[in-house]
Length: 233
Image (cartoon, rainbow, N blue to C red):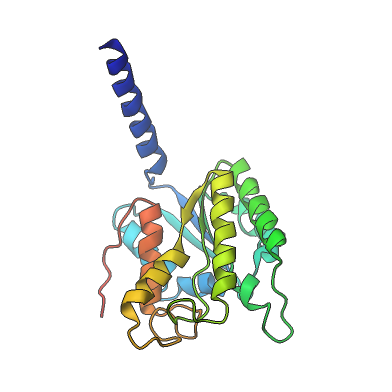
């Protein structure tokens, strides 16, 4: 009976600590760090705006900051992590990157990011943020083309880079928001004509209103919140 009581108390303590860790505070400063998808996320109906509008209904003093720059890859985030993120003292950092690291490997004049540099770069970024005491959420890259069953040109590479992101999240003991999985799962059920764009994206990569909503929903799940105040037209 004594050991049973100790076990129950230990479990209750663990749950309590987890709840405190995940609970958002009214003075939290959440930063979204990424490429053009994040840059556009601050626009009306963008995923950052949806998250901001949803959270502000419960936490009016919470601060939401977009730090996305078009064309960015992991090495670009490494170059600006100190000035664009750490200097602003966020309490939570969401890293949403990977599309350009893959896509630019086939674009004229572009250079993708080798897998080893993608992995070590992500880890360096995360470790720097962790040293500040901020919480980190890492997103897997989404899609470059919306066809189902691995029929897009870069699906294999995106799966590989998503796998790297998952591994890095596990290695650094941070939260993972698996957007790749969420997008692929959604498109299996909602792309009956197997089109390349126009459902979750407007151009195979940048988000449509539905894509922005899906990203917002998934990230709010990671923040242990739910999307409110959004009308699905």
